[in-house]
Length: 321
Image (cartoon, rainbow, N blue to C red; front, side, top):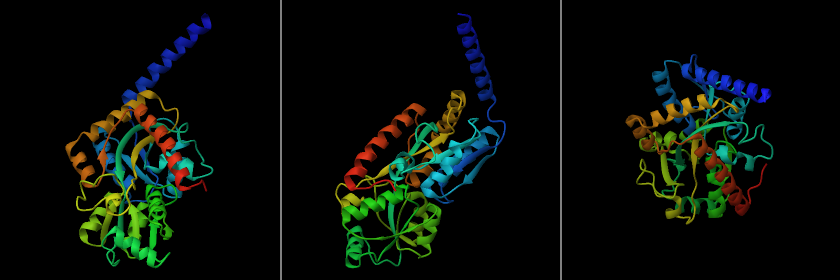
């Protein structure tokens, strides 16, 4: 009985201490890790929210780009960080299926992170350099069939939504493409804008300015419906490949075992920013669908995504490497 009383007292004292810490949080700069290069979809999202967090909390939220290995390098940093709320992570859709693409990850997708919120959804957009003659998805497929391996397609790593988009595209179209890997979406976007590669699947945000300037041509989006910011661009399914669909979740993570009070404070801040009219407008303009969720809802989504992708990968023959 005495042990139970002491245990109850210890738990109460711990709860009070963490609540007090959360009430004062943050008291120093926050490191916001982006597991891709500057200019990618995750980076665009992180910078947008970091600015608003800095303004509201009076503490600098510093972006730390750690690209490479399809987001694994940056994610590992956060999985091993102190669970004090001063290191957070933004992740792209690859977070949910990296464990299915890589035979061995340096962390456990579910156990080694605290999920904060499902921030937004977004498809990828298929773009080609302006010098590519193809004006539509069918024309691009015809080019690829006429010269197998002749088209170079940039990717941002095995565990990215862009990589999965092109693998699915190749299989469904029955074509051969030469994949050129880059460290992150910013690097792959720079490569296609510079004419080093001919095609790319990427988040709409980084590509839209170049599409509007005429340097890139958008041929299709991977979602089940057209994107508000690119209404003239058909889905790949309607353009050429019925049944083709791929869009995923962007979310916010933190190190494992972070106090619930700090998770809740972070969650409330991200949801507050999501409701701001200027942020919602920017997100839609960049091809994102604002979401916002509880930590539990985000965890449930990740678990369901992992199960769904496992079935899809098995059907199309993708195995861990």
